Length: 144
Length: 291
Image (spheres, chains in turn red, green):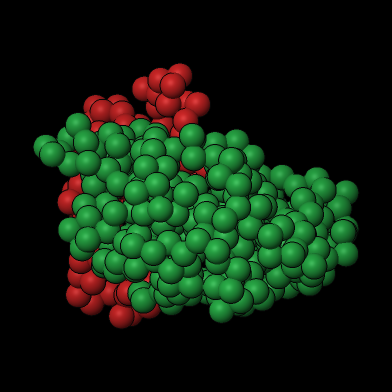
């Protein structure tokens, strides 16, 4: 059911291009001033996430990966599936804005000139029907 | 009353029916929407990283132009435009430093003086017109129509710019009641429609549409009413796509709230642009004798 843009080989190659000089937490400092070390892994974010079935890491696992400086989080599908619906941010009992954390992780990748969108799959008919806000959102979210 | 109106790109193109029906309603209520001059794309999604001010430029420029036109309020139909404009407005209200940086960068524009309030058209109907008054304008109540109000994300979250409660919103339900419809409530009313994944992950979005629409149907709904053009496309069009993924599934019609108000007020059906919908919304209106 899930179609994730690109393929795993390409993504692995792309991730090799990403330069990270510090720990993930350090890299995220300027991007997202959230107290994610306060996460106590309750899973409320995962329980309410509309895309949870398609994700390889649950949102609380993403936070745990960041805390443990596990950089493979940058190759997870989860951060690209997040569509910034803010449900997790709204419900987090520790008031961590996970929506912002997901965006910051995407930005680490995008700012290394790795784009995540392939428009070749769109038919002309779809191009005429899909609302403009969808295109602008996709480009804003997936292109650096 | 004249109101300054910010359209955004989608209501001028693929969601024209939201604009035409909205204009018909506001005219019938005795107000006038005046499209603002020199508006530009709002950027659609708010900049979420702390160090990224660049993506606040586009929304801020619109707020500056509203100020240039001597207005303290702009009204939008599009949920995503409303959300993005409100988030930028909030950011510069909270950070004088950020506002200075943005003002200095746009040296061809006047400085933003933080005087503009961004209002969703639904807020205008609830707070300025009032649903009780709207009810008095109803000539053809939507009697017998069982409708699920669908809120989606951007009118409810983040909470700082929400127009209603994020978990238990009632604005659309209250509106439906004032139009004489029966409200069908389901927990999926506040869940994401799949948003921009509709471009690259059609099946994923069709699955979202199926989840939301089928929950409405199981609860007895024969239609959905919403506000956001992104949600409208996903529930209506991707919902139709879902028919080929789920045996026996049939997508129900999806209406903009402006269209249902227009029908309930007995306005010209041509203003509703129903021919642009994927699932034909007219048969249900005929069946329930609204038209």
